[in-house]
Length: 197
Image (tube, rainbow, N blue to C red):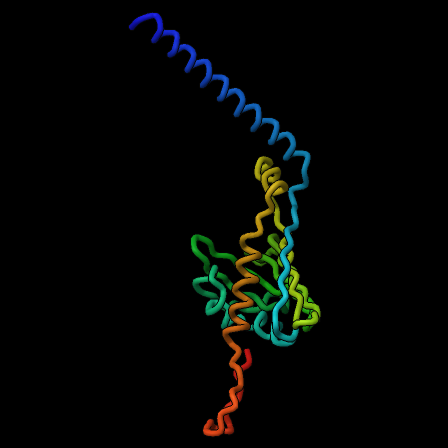
């Protein structure tokens, strides 16, 4: 090996060491910053749905119908009520969680929270319905606990809205798919009526 190749090899090693030190420094700084941030974070999403609040409310409380429209669920199993609260097990890809209705103020506010082993915890979802010009404004807030300090910093910079967005899209698809337009057809059965959720 000649002198030029040795020099190049040493330069690559120095560069790799500097990159490793820089990466460790960034991770250490993010960890320190994350420790200063609160472990509980709130993420919010909004949608305006072309249905009245009562129709949206009925879909949200139809537990048995949830696996049919929620793309994140594979199955839902009803459980006995805990302390007078409706409880169920959600079976999703790679995760099973027990959820309960923590509060319900029909048809404006619904609070769902995780309740594993009968102990309330996070995440906590608050769904608020308000009449809007075109139907209902749905505001979905998720309060979660983030233990990893580096992830706290990442979530502050880029909040995890994917689950909220998916839920709101699924809800909108369910409400629009469950709606049939009434067609003026003289030969149609007079007893037929539009299907409501």
